[in-house]
Structures are given as C-alpha cells and as structure tokens.
Amino acid sequence: MDHPDFTEPLLAWGVPRLRDLPWRNTRDRWSVLVSEVMAQQTQVSRVVPKYAAFMQRFPTPVACAEAPLADLLTLWSGLGYPRRCKHLHDAARAIMQLHDGQVPDSLDALLALPGIGPYTARAVLAFADERDVAVVDTNVARVLSRVVNAPLTARASQELADRVLPEGQAWEWNQVLMDFGARVCVARNPNCNECPIRRHCAWNAGPDPAHASALTSKPQPRFEGSDRQARGLLMKALAERGVRRVDVARVMKLSDDSKRATRLLQSLVRDGLVEIRGDWCRLP
Ligand code: SF4
Image (tube, rainbow, N blue to C red; front, side, top):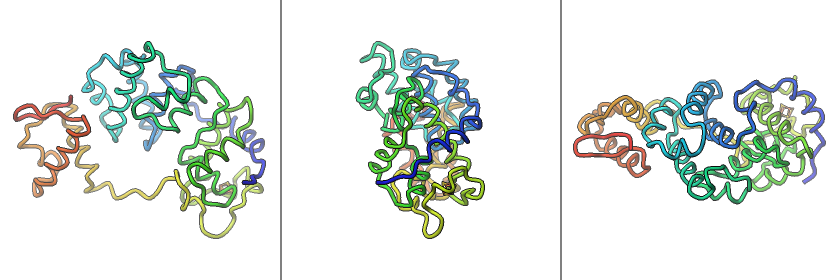
C-alpha cells in the first residue's frame, strides 16, 4: 500500500511535545514491560502512581516472581483488568525460570512469555533497546488507517507501520505516533485543523476508516452495572480483606441476583484471581 511520507513533519512536531512519563526515562526492559502491561486500556494519569509503587516493590522480574500473586493484586487494585496482573506475574516466573531472571531481547522469546502479545513484545524492543521495531497499539492503528484512508487488518497495520518506521529513530517515532493518536488524532473528533500532517492525510471526508480497522478501539459496553464492575468490586474488597462466600453477592452489589454473583465468582476463580478456602474468598 502506498503511503504519504509523513514521518518528518510528525517527528518535528512531536519530539518537542513528548509527555514526560516515568517509563520514558528508562531503558530497562522489565520497567518498560511493566509500564506497557499497566498502560493497556488504562489512562496514563492512573498508571503513573501505580507504576512507581510497583517498581519500588518489584524492581526486577525475580522480585516479582518470588512474591505471592496476592501482593501484586493488592498493589494493582484500582487499575482494573486484573488478569493483566496475573499475566505479568506468570511472565515474571517464566523469565526467572527460562531466562535467568533477565527479560529476553528477542521477539520470539518475548512472544513466548505468558500473556505477552505482539504489541507488548515489540514495545519492549523499541522502548528499552531502541531497536528498529514498529509498535501498533489502538492509537497507531487509528492514525495509520486515516492517513491512508483505508480500513486495515492487523497485519496490514503492522506492515504499514514497519514501512514508515524511520531507521534509527524507532524510540522517538513510536512514542510520537502513540502520543499523536492519543492527543490529536483521537477516536472521536480528531483535531484535524491543528494537525501537523493534515496535508499528508488522505481522509478528509466520508466514513472514518478507523471504525472498520482491526486493532482500533471500539465503543466499550457500559461499565455501570456490568460484569466487569461487579468483579472489580469484589477484587477491591479482597485487596483489603477476606470476604465470606455468603457476602460475595452483596459486595458485588448483586444481592438480588445471587446466581450471577456465583457465576462471576467462579470466573474469577477460573482466571486464578480468587481462591475459595472453606467459607472464605481470598486473593491467591
Ligand atoms: S488530518 Fe485529522 S484524521 Fe488526518 S491524521 Fe490529522 S488529525 Fe488524524
């Protein structure tokens, strides 16, 4: 697919405007891995304090792997999507067992870690090792599809990202492209009037090609009253104390639907996020 050459104007615009985030001041693979897992589907402002606390408590994969999952989940409380936390713990254990406690530096080895997908694996190489690797998150996928005005499959997004990557500038480029998508070329009402690559962008009217692209964010179901909210309420309570089984529905605010509460509790047990011992539920 042809693409306009928008790298230079976007880099010139974006490098001086890069947000000063704590994980941008490190080239440590573990720190980058933790920040990337935490930042998935979560606002940066909520991640920053949790990241600092996490890195202080678990500065290495070994420190993380040797801690009980309950300690991680307690620290994670409030970030949401606790399965990410379990994945991180599982990945730390694999790193300790298979890689002498060092986060590996090859794409294949990173992808083989539990819960680590293509975005996170590439992000580690691009942001810790400054390797010429293109990362495609939801923001990047959206920008790319709009610039070429075409819906893109996951593979087409990655191929296009690989092709536009300016050699030797992967760290800056990936950060700028992600920031640009998060702040200017946003999902709803992109700020095209002040866009530094407006004249390179092929989308100026018609349906938004990002809507039909893979990897772009899709409208989330309502949180209020959702299963996710109910699970989150129980996880939050468990981060503070044990919860008796008979109290689970009340804690989940599902006193009038105990069947649903039981189903959600079972799903948390299956995910390895909750243990039931006798009459009590606890973090594992
Ligand atoms: S012109 Fe608008 S849609 Fe195109 S890249 Fe810029 S902000 Fe995004």
